[in-house]
Amino acid sequence: MIIRYILVFILFWNFLDAFELEDIKNLNIYNIKGNFTQEKILKGYNQTLTTKGIFELKNNELYWTTQVPFLSPLKITQEGVWQYKNNQWEKINQKYDKELFLSLVYLDFEKLKKQFEIKLEGNFQQWNIELLPKDLWLKKIFSSIQIQGGDFITRMTLYEKNGDTTINTFFVP
Figure (cartoon, rainbow, N blue to C red):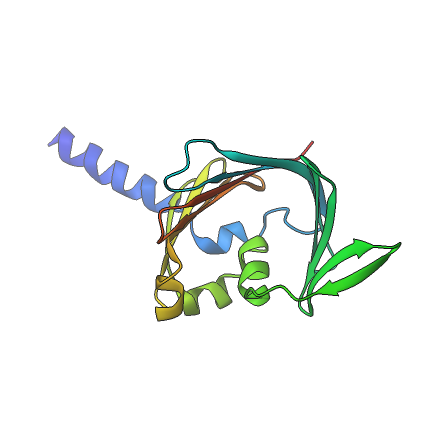
């Protein structure tokens, strides 16, 4: 009899402490800056390619400045990808889904739900989101995308269909 009460209490407690996608909307993902490390693991290549730099999210734009192994300032907006050259931002012809990219960075679940099955695990302090592509085009590119965090996104891992993996780790002071 006591075991039954304990089980009911555990189930009830888990229900009270439920963690949902809505809870992540309160994260500090706007007007945030810090450092990043990006590791690219290529299938069939024994060495990991690593870049490091700084990032800043502000005004619905991502500023991504690679500092190591070379300097490359980029800005990603709804209008496209921009590179800082000759003391000005120049639009570059980069083929990528900018809306998808910004949806990932800003955790826009309304847009992500259209293209991914979303699985959430964890709690307020440490959570993990797994995105599984539903869209046929995305299924050709990604096996899955993992996003981990706490108060902010700390890691985003892209598992590609071709066997390559990209790991972005974020450090916010």
